[in-house]
Length: 276
Image (cartoon, rainbow, N blue to C red):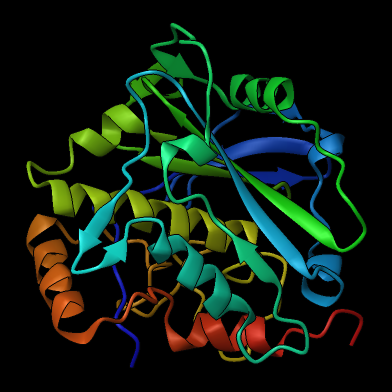
């Protein structure tokens, strides 16, 4: 059984449906916010799983929102966590893409301070579009991660409970650094919280759970759409708290396993046959 990490709190997912974005919390309830999606950032899941031979994660951050880097445990580099989990999603497939994940800030882009206390989905997409020129080659795919100061705006108010979000249907993800820093006083724990947030959001972007790729077994939480019923999977919705996270870190120190996805989610990606 692969060791997995439960997020410290609910992660908001921004869904693309019929060309529009709407926000849905981990409770499965949605609000009335809708905005036009960015077609230039559309992600072709079928091509991703059948044609792409190279994947690169592009990262941009505001001052004071720089991602954690360096060694997280033993000789493991912080961003190896995301890299190994991306590799796990493609393990056993006919095409296992080459994965590039930045290891330190010199391989990332620092952007000017945006001066925002809260962020709407539209503002996140506008910022992504101003930083990155989306088109890439036939067999290459980029994923984009923004590290921002401030919090997500929901119902006109800041929501400090949201540490990350993804625009499903696009390769765009966001991490709210202020929310990350509230999670723990331990640097090691914060590093794992940040990486777990990235892995969770990457899972949504990659079509999990039942969010673009079919399930091999029924592991969709009926009360929390796009999330897994396996409590040991990073796609499980529930806030488990700092005590569980510390326990996970101790397990990882003894086992060396970095894969946070449960067997059910990994079976889904391994078995997905576009057009089949």
